[in-house]
Image (tube, rainbow, N blue to C red; front, side, top):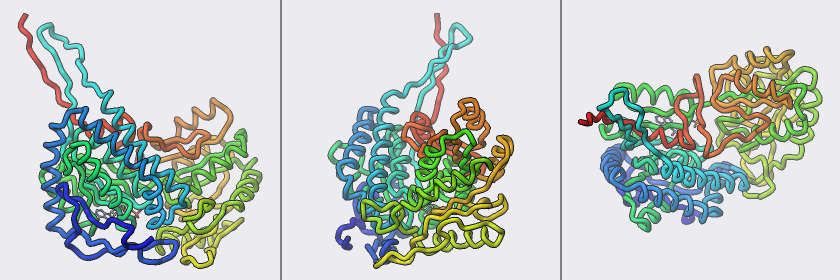
Length: 487
Ligand code: ADP
């Protein structure tokens, strides 16, 4: 793709304009070539954007539910209609295999559909009052101006997951996308500007600012009109942001890192378990926060499971992410591949065995960022690959002798985002699903994400839920009116 194929304009106060700060160079992780130069927003521009976001909150609050729903539905339709182009941009800047990028665009559109439906169905409450002369009305009001910070692994879907319910609830939102993947966000931004004009919605309801993360975050968080921060990213940055929001007692939703266990019991259907393992582990080469990180296997079937998984992994096509057949593309950047190498080296030094992979793979004509699908056998809970999120195509396997031990291993980490349980025993399925200390459980399901489900984590994986009716509630402030009624 050429520089001219990308929109590099930001959206501030309803106007598309070039940033006034230093230029950000965006690279294609597969080829190493520069895709575009994006002029970023300066601190002064970020402060203006915060001001405009606050003013737009009042306009959104005044917009009827029908008007909000029309905007959100139209955005879903526009995203879907532009599927091929958005997916190509997403793949170019993230290295996500193109088939998955197309899937992400559809996933993003589903958040707009879902939020529009949730807003249409939303209803307040009239609880039974104890006194005869009293009525209590619970009103749902929009939170106001909100600020979102999104990561590079779902450059479109994470914006959709935050923006769709914000708009549907009657809030404005300023978004700062990741500096690794601003081009998908800016393509969506141009689309938003057009759709808002077409449906007559406030054009400033959404702003998109690309630039230095800390500078933009400070401007938005410190501005008195910003009422909520929603962040998806690392636990480390989540803690910094929570501390920044604390003096203002600002609402925060934090979707942070995971360290998902994938439990395979002896009574699992092994072929089905292998399919689900491939889904969770090789979606975007393991670079998602709900990717299985630790494979906990019943000692009785561990060998057989890994043999079948190995066979399946050997069939995964490693290559150019623009190719429809590719399942394994490049990792996002050099730090990502260095982390995978560090985890594998640490495991091997600790006694783990590389069953397959364990090194970079050279793909002709492309950058040196491809890592082979890897199985590490004989891992232990103290290894780096078990304590930290590897975020790469590595299956770190260890065994257990009982259900109790499996649950202890599964829960014995600081994170609590997702967990997977593979079994055909319905009692065990429910027992283990309930025992897992996390927010999302894939029960014989390696791809549990869905726009209609309340996604989020526990412990170091953060706070808040996104998706479905709960996702809408995250942008709603309850108020009750107590009335005295004379008889
Ligand atoms: P990852 O390691 O997956 O890139 P990060 O938490 O570093 O995760 O990044 C997620 C998002 O947080 C990105 O948009 C990034 O620019 C932003 N970010 C990083 N550091 C800060 C910070 N100090 N303040 C605000 N946002 C930040």
